[in-house]
Amino acid sequence: MNTSQPGKLQPEEFDIVILGGGTGSTVAAWTFAGEGKRVAVVDRKYIGGSCPNIACLPSKNIIHSAKVASYVRRSREFGIKHECFTIEMTGVRQRKREMVSGLNQMYLENYRNTGAEFILGTGRFLAPRTVEVVLSDGTVRQLRGTNVIVSTGTRALLPSIPGLEAAQPLTHIEALELDRVPEHLLVVGGGYVGIELSQAMRRFGSKVTVIDRNRRLMQKEDEDVCDALRELLEDEEIEIHLAAQLKRVSGKSGESVSVVIEQNGRTRVIEGSDILVASGRTPNTEGLGLELAGVELTDQGYIKVNERLQTTAPGVWAIGEVAGSPQFTHISVDDFRVVHANLNGGKRVTAGRQVPYCLFTDPELAHIGLSETDARARNIPYRLFKVPMEANLRARTLSETRGFMKALVAAKSDILLGFTTLGAGAGEIMAAVQIAMIAGLPYTALRDAVLTHPTLTEGLIPLFSSQPSVHDVVDANSTASYRSVAG
Image (cartoon, rainbow, N blue to C red):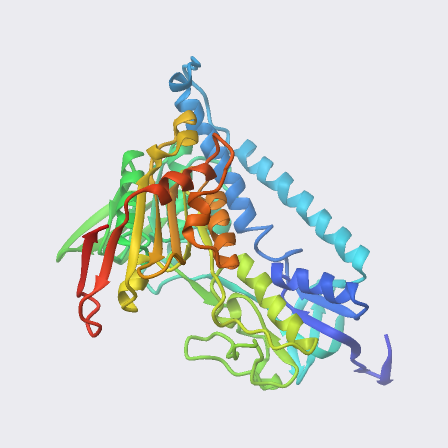
């Protein structure tokens, strides 16, 4: 390593230095390096960041194992006699670990093939566009980038509740590494992580209780979606406490734990064996030396960026969750596209882009575009097409008819405004609608299409052939002034 004088490091020069190795960072590294740029990616622990190691893909792996367990329990429904079976969580965990290991090897091979350098170590800014990295063996390197991208993500938020930290609660990370089935899992939080893992652990055999401070599960969704999700979990004998404030925790997760909740002015104690906290995320910005680089934070602690994802420091960009972007892996990848375009002379921005998402319960929830709640808040008239999943013939062949599909279409044109489905293959069905929206196609293009029979996507034909209800704005100054008229 070059030094300008004894004891002083000379920074190594790179075109792009990336602090944080998430999916957006990884795609950025491979792309920039493939274009001939010298690129370095720094991450403290994970090759490829959270998604392939401790979050998206591992959780979906575990959830699928839980779905297999559900199928075994339902075996008589499919004409298969199977009296009893045992869940071996060590086997569930091993399947997940093998997938993660394979992904790590694939990522490392891509780093080698593209020429991007992956550095496992702890990085922080020393000066503008200059990052110090401490490796596991104590070796120190300094990297200076013509441009630096920060993508350090977020982590599970642990609320300040008496006794909670001392109880050593699970987060999604520890929950995905369990080698046993919790006897009674208390889940704090009724959002994405809480709902997905509640259903999975129930199917493995845990008794599960969900505690959420909001009036509804997934409270930002439309009311019919929230109600359907609650019914889905209650059908699997998951106990749910809504509008419940967690006041105190005692005991130790994994042994015995009890929580005190306040609900409707009354206090009650709930006891369990384990507690999982899934009540929000907080940005990973501490200890990065951002102030030394001239990078400012928002009031919520996220990195302050403009719509081109430039920070307040010249030559420093931020992508993904740490920049306050929607907390989805596919959005972090699109954030990279925004930065990539702007570094190559373009003017791409984050404003106005589509944000599709999927909740991987069984059945799935998927959404793109405007919801009914959004339309009402923004005073946008719409026509609502809605059918139960029973109208989908492929769903009937699968004995998976729970849920519904609904679409919002402009009141005075045939333009698709939004789509939501709770049902089998929801994410794949949504993709077809999203592509139509990208192309600016009218809903009639899907209604009149020749779609393969019998497939789940074919269910869009009965959806858009149904009679819509019309939701008009009566008073543009009131979000509560809608009237529904049968179409």
